[in-house]
Length: 163
Image (cartoon, rainbow, N blue to C red; front, top):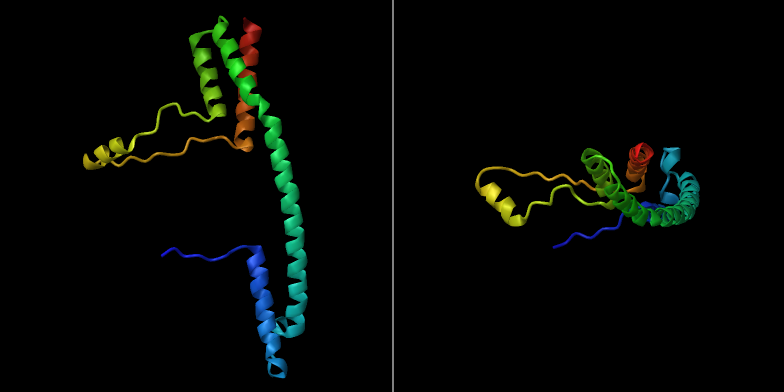
């Protein structure tokens, strides 16, 4: 059976509010010696937690919008990268340079240099006693792609200047 449970900041605040409500329901009997868990302290902390949750939700919306806008800015570069590769192929640069730029373009397009091993090949290797470990080669996040774009610019800039 699948385990279902809620997690996150909102759930933590809701659980804390429920704890404060339970402690409040005890009335005058609830008199802890530790000031941190007295009703007055927990009430203040609950107000702070709700304020923080509101701030987090607001900041997440702003952050999400910024990420979307950044993604839209980078979308046109996919076609440009292909055009750069095609222009370089038709130029008179060396095969080594073409291969180097093709590898950079492959990273930017999210393609693998070698195809993934099929399930049949994995099973055959396991039967032969060889363990196959595949590592993700994806470098599609903007943070990973920025240095690769820089590398593409530097590689192609020097090559087109030399032609």
